[in-house]
Amino acid sequence: MKALIVNQLSKEYKTKKAVDDISFSLETGEVFALLGRNGAGKSTTINMLSGILTPTSGTIEILNTPYRHMNKIKQRIGVLPDNSNYYNEMTAIQHMKFFARVKGVSARKDSLVDLLESVGLGEDLGRKVGQFSLGMRKKLGIAQALIGSPELIFLDEPTSTLDVESALQIRQLISTLASQGITIFMTSHNLEEIERICDRVAILNHGKIEKMGTLEQLREAHTRSINITIKYQASDQSQESLWLDRLQQMAGAVQCKTPYVEIELDEEEVIPEIVQTAVECKIRIYSIERERVSLENIFLDEKLA
Image 1 (cartoon, rainbow, N blue to C red):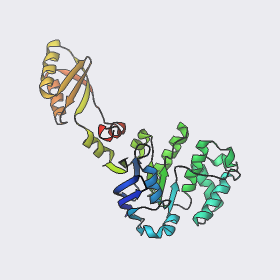
Image 2 (cartoon, one colour; image 1 turned 135 degrees about the horizontal axis):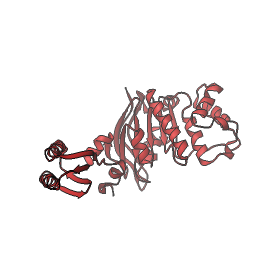
Image 3 (cartoon, one colour; image 1 turned 30 degrees about the vertical axis):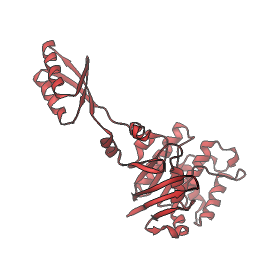
Image 4 (tube, one colour; image 1 turned 120 degrees about the vertical axis):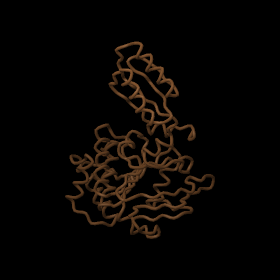
């Protein structure tokens, strides 16, 4: 079942089109990331999908339910907005109880305590939120988003302001939720984090989706050449020279910095031939490392400049 279907969604203001005719869908249990520079339209998109903003045009279907039934949908989703407001005089557990009532779901105290513990606030559930750091407030927002066992969760920058240990904890929580069949739609400026936990990525630029797919699909579309580095050892200088000459014939560029040789290829089918020529020239191969295109490389593509 599709957890989310978005078709030609747009949001216009008087002087700007913040989101411009975007379409995509999410599978149940998928972790999906929407990336983009500041002002690209990420938060506007999440706010429309979660019912905070009304779309100018387009259609949205959430959990097999039309968008016009958003009041029913809200009980089945969780939302961590970009900016969460809290009552400073309330404790963490009081906030959880209050939000459960606002959401219209019944939640036992022990289940709310479990949620606070899952985000690392188990020892602070009785503290007033006014005493919380920015990171602790972020954790509270994530715990609130999990109230009522939502089937789809929207997380806007879930690990921003968190320390390294807390960020790791939240990433693990996201992966656990996905393994339980819960769908995650998130934004993040932490590209390394996205590479680790997301199944698919969409890159938003000036309100339009420029690229979308799995990380492998994005890498393949971005890769213009294949770069490999070989660590080797030659017992005979003439054999080494012969091998390097043969590499020059197979590759676009070869740079030797003994005991490494860096090779640029047009296609990966050449790699077995390189190994075969090494065997023929009695060259010992210790490792072959292929340079992988990072999500940062893709995101900073000149097409998005």
